[in-house]
Image (cartoon, rainbow, N blue to C red; front, side, top):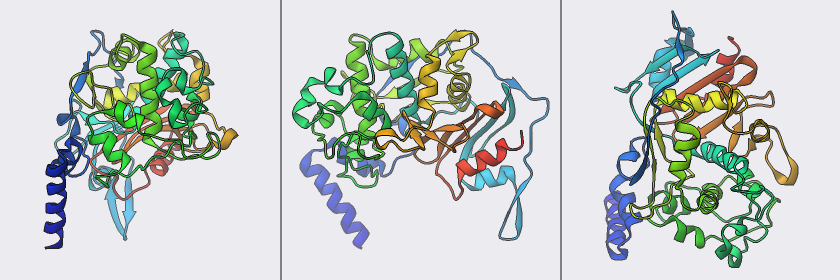
Length: 367
């Protein structure tokens, strides 16, 4: 009865406030890897000359796991932990590729926060193209309306490193929280305008999707007449030879802004190509897509100005040994180990009961 009463209260609140955000939250409940179906989107075309990883003559098996005195085959372990796609690519060869729960190589999965790492790549491209002059610039050079919110000392670098000091509630499970507003809301620009600086920039690390959405608005302003999706198609999806078209979810259909903190909707093999780009320091078969310097900056340990050693320019550092990851809600991962020339992609309906970073590192030790 209490659950019914609570549900009714939220539903009535949604009706009373005429809130699209609350209505979406109630109707769709919690976020899911199929959420690309519920949001407006900008479509991004695939390449007419797709790059294809080489299939292995024989796929790896990786043995089994021992859980509660029971041996569980690797495939079953992945499936039991809510995995829908798992790829291991070594020296450009697919050593392991399995799909579960009726998913296959053509199935679309929402990236969630893996999109943060892709947004970072586009910031690097914009620097290369002189659309953004420097990450040391104040964000208000592009978003002057945020000066009154205390953003005048927040540099683009602070946003990249999650050290901006912006107040933001990251919970996806609170319908009145900031993350729910950004995810289910219909006006990201308005939501960003409500954000306030809480602490001095460069004094603490706090993971926040708000930082990446401000970056997205900075990027949109820098691009001027071109959308972020068009820029990604031009800079990444076409030159990387993506096999499938993709889309980027928007806050609204008319004049929508890309949800740069999340919501690129793609397939496992194409996500793996993002990993390959950074594995090769921004070089794609002899063409420098994003500068080597940017890739190195984005994946190095840096603890200056309260930056966390394990997070740099919207990428997670898996260890202090040079491996790194794009990581998203519900257990979406692109893991890159340059020393092993290895890429692992894991996509899932839920995180499951495992330490994926630890699993990736253990698999890397096999090569």
